[in-house]
Image 1 (spheres, rainbow, N blue to C red):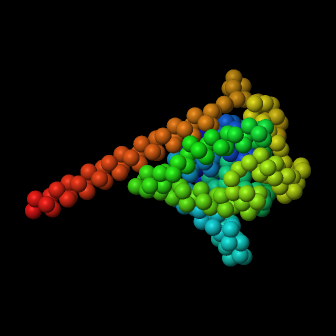
Image 2: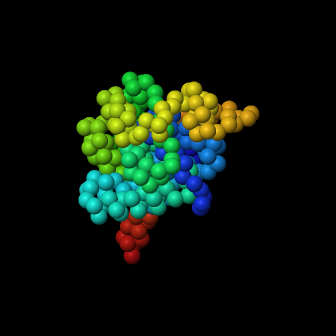
Image 3: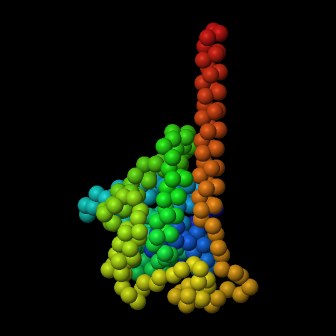
Length: 259
């Protein structure tokens, strides 16, 4: 989680709706859920950037249908959402965390667990991630990459959903608090758990009714390092692809001139 994509396992029971926003320890939480739920976890940020192209395209379809909001759009949205998560034990990170009511309808037995942290430090962290992952030239650099060419339009859809839910497109401490308040409105109290990854296994295992894993420390994945590494990797891939395209173009022009 956070460093490589997960592969669905057919027949896996869906058990947990991760309702925590990005940068609340979702990568560590995802890895912990993989251990406790004995199945792959769909970490949205990781799957969008490292997973197969179909996954980011399906999320774009889900977001478009959600934003449209008609009965026919909602029907297609539910079908696509269920198809996206088939074979996974849980979903974490955004936009999964913004589809809690829909996911509760699809998976009535799943626990809703929201990872949390201090709102002010979360806001600063989100600012850092946004500045690191969305430079002005990113869309052009990613254009030659099959899946990542959709990344900027995908971010625009995420921002539109964010604005509709929290009345602002850019994450701030106010939207963080609005998300928590929204969860308390839409999720029954006995089904909602708030969890800080720094607290380790005990509260998470208690929420899921599982024993604490023996001789296995709680996973701690540095999301910032993972995001920076993934961003750098994709930029290098994009530049390499552009270099190859330009080299082929230059060779074609040179051949045409000679002939």
